[in-house]
Picture 1: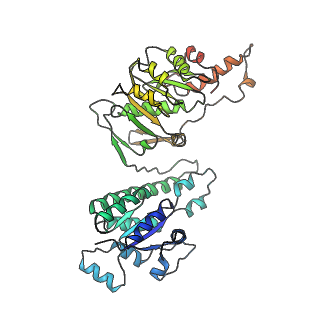
Picture 2: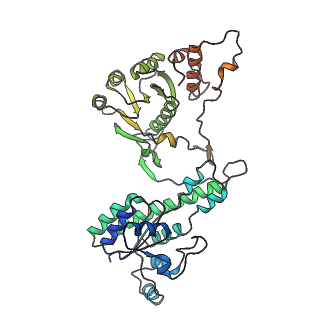
Picture 3: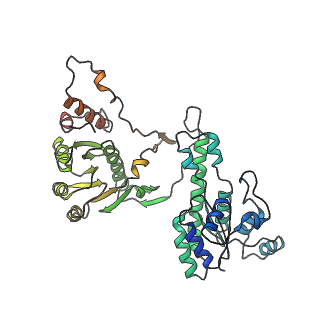
Length: 429
């Protein structure tokens, strides 16, 4: 049966008007609420208010809009059950075949540093998750969309299947809904469950499978990656990533984000074994990093905070490297490095500048540990006023200490940064 009626109620209105117009052109009757209905009318698309459809007004400042038998009955009744169909007809409950809902921006709201508890609570969506779950439960008959990225595929399916979507696709969308609502509930739990100290009394986590990794810590160990890693890092070429590759990539990215001027870092097993910096030339920064330890870079990870140039690619290609990370790879540099088919090239997106604020999560016996990420190099403010030696350090020595101090934060064990690393400094950042 073709989709004949859709209910649209979204906070994120990106792509909404174009999607709704396609639905209207396919003969779908559109129901909507509040700001979504206004956005559709402003775009010249016919729409019926849910309050008009149900005969019940919106109440309590919009808190009660869609919690009505005519809405949830239209979503939940089975189209292949004679008793369900009879009850729907007796109670004047037409079918709603498509639900398009994304939720109040609770996560974005509580991420604000000055958010109040009252503001957070007002951004807890009730009707949205309820409609999503009703539609997802009945996905054998109802199409449910929680992500604007799926709009185009839904229209394609409807055009290819006489106005309907396939059951297999509806099942995929339903799984996506339950994942999203579980994440949403987790965010609410984690915020409202904070103890007076600011620590979460209850911590929940729900992430989608992103990819199977090449292997875990050792080749005989299976490993999978969950979440949205590819939002921040794009693999340009090379073998599949392994567990240790992911750890190295994170460590390398965290190091390079501590520096502003052209910087190159070389890592082995998440530890920096050479970091160099120059005012202008990335190739010079590489040489300083490489001179720190010429043996350690073999099979390691190289990261830089500028697009990788052909000049730098030439010298890097002379040694065996496992992973190279950069914000971009110049075309000629990439062409040269493509000759090494196993070499992993990873492009780091600017979005990681924001993501690095997330917590560090580590497993432990019986559970997990959740720790604030370390973004600060402590003790670098007003160093000149804290000198206790007979001879104050020169400006060059002071800059070297600032540089070394930023690196020490990323070194495991006893945090020894050799003098050659300090020699590689020059600028403070």
